[in-house]
Length: 367
Image (cartoon, rainbow, N blue to C red; front, side, top):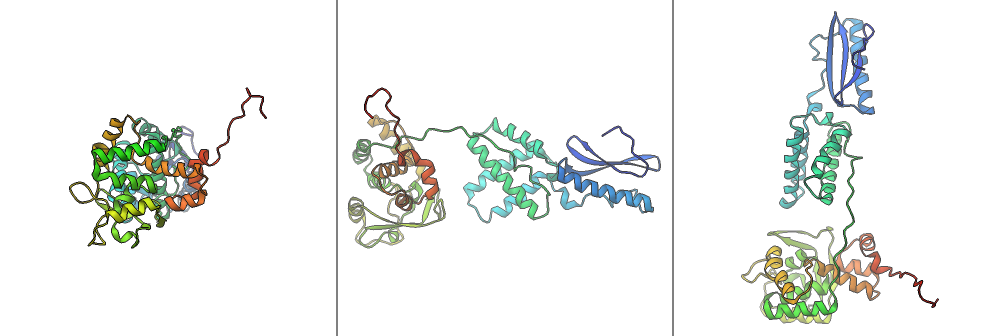
């Protein structure tokens, strides 16, 4: 549209570098007013409304030559960085420090890419350009999480009337399928427990509990004696402990698990005669809570290497229990209740175990 003459008294809406601006002539001088809006269908309607208002003032002699009357309000000029800072401040009351670190990392990348650019001036093309740049630096699954954060930020901004549209809604990233780690076999489980008994006896009960319950590592670390029933036949799991921070479980839901006789006896043997209900059930060798990184690097990994068992993270104990339970035809709903899974998630991730459909043997004469 640039370069075309407007009829006298009319205000044209133009797109300049992806941002909308208004152009008109008054007393022989051409005027430009940048709307601070990305060129989108909805923003064009807003810009056209402002253009009509200026045309009305030109026709009635109420035109403001300083343009102050027509400039976007300050609240609509909040920058990308300022918007995300406000969103981060809001979320900081609801999330833990480890999660907040993700926000801070993303904030730095927004600062480097957008600088002082107005949030309301970001369209889908700008959003995609930023994501493509980010894709060269972080994994696809992490990138998907960051896009979700940006969507949530702009949705919040719309509610606060700081922005008018969400440019991240249609921005997507493909996460390539990743092969799930193989569950440990029964033979491997027994070897690992025996390996700990010989080389790292302090952690033997902890490892047995992880394999036997399929609970998350942080949930086992968080267990206190007050969470165990008097006869040690049941355990309440409703908290997780990591890096010294105690919080709710990953799903925010608690559960009570009926333990096997083996795990019941393990806890009865382990529990001190005069125990403090607030004491941890499983502790680090030097006392205090187990650090999952130290456990993995100094105990778990060396023992698997020594045994010649292919490395899988300690979290695979959870995958192992679920897989073995499903293979033994335990009801998937019951498995989900025991492990604290969402039932739909369990079906999505373990469908291959639940529905063990076999290929037809086309080389056999058997029906």
